[in-house]
Amino acid sequence: MERELRILMLEDLEEDIGLIEHSLRKEGLHFTSRAADTREQFVLALNEFEPDVILSDHALPQFNSVEALKICRKGGSNIPFILVTGTVSEEFAVSCLKQGADDYVLKSNLARLYSAITNALKQRNIEVKRKKAEKALRRQNEELVKINNELDSFVYSVSHNLRAPLMSVLGLVRLAHEDDKKFGNRLHEYFGMMEHSINKLDETLKEILDYSRNARMEIVVEKVDMRKQVEDGIERLKYHEGSEQIQKIIVIREKFPLYTDGHRVAVVLNNLISNSIKYRDPHKEHQFIKIEMHIDQTTATLYFSDNGIGISDEWQAKVFDMFFRATERSEGAGLGLYIVKEAVEKLGGKIQVQSKVDEGTTFIITLPNHLREIESQEQPRLIQS
Image (cartoon, rainbow, N blue to C red; front, side, top):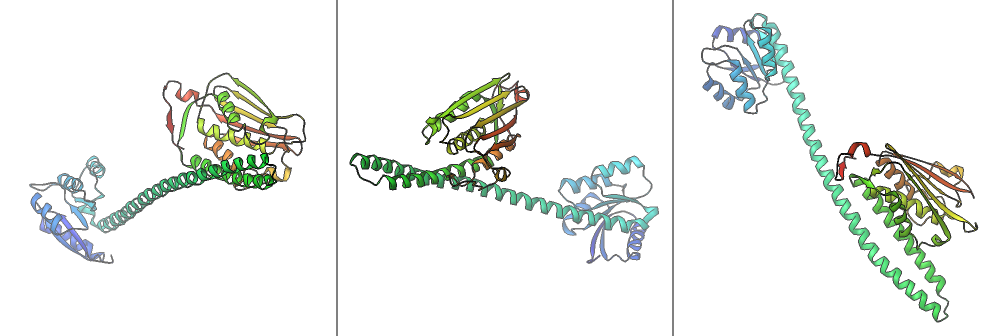
């Protein structure tokens, strides 16, 4: 031992105290000891002597080891407690260990006492370190939660504060653009460039918001009307340039209702519809987006197809990467398909892409249907992500 131990012995026989001390010193243990043989002496020694180890005989005239152990553990003491006694039954020894004793040593085999003490101290040291680590981890987790909450607030606040003036500027640019055309001036090209830049920045802000919400928000499982989700997504993007030229085909085959997270499904659909409009092929006379969904009791499969410009083979493995932009026609930060993949995986689903240049692209998405899990529930519920 690196320092002198304080050993409290609950023992009423002087000769047994002498045998225990002799056995420990023989092993080279440096210690000071204090003996007690009544409840009052034991409680006083716990407070004044502050022992590192307690060695307790079982039966004393006015006190016993079970009572002493209860006093220690009830008071929150984590001091190693070792039963050092005469012959006891196996059942009694096991009972003491279950109640919080660290070990038991028979007086007829004191040679084992030194190793029992050192093992108990080592175990207690490990326990102390583990609790410290757990406390530190809890503190770090609390700090991380605080940081995440602050980051969420920051992202939403900054995005809102940026988008509001952006929309005002965009409205003014469009008004000026119209006035310019009325008076036959030639600034419309500049207005078009300004409008494009504003839309590009707004697209980036929306991608950041979608990414943040998908990463932070709990999954809310509820009944989702897929036809309405698709129609809302198309309606929301109907003023995008070129949207009016594209035929929208919706096929929903719903054998069972779909239960999933409606917000994330909307994010997936909005991004895919927006991509199909951006990367349409204006040279084709018939442009289309086909959204087909099959829903059964356990799975929903979405086939999202278009006949746009397509994706070359070399880029198909990278389209779901963060910040990847295959063409200059991309107006955002390159987060769109990354967010789609993250949202799908958050829902426990999978996504794959099939595409040919100049022919079009198909995304195939499979999502679990939580119908069986919440058939008996009437309200939406939270599932930990």
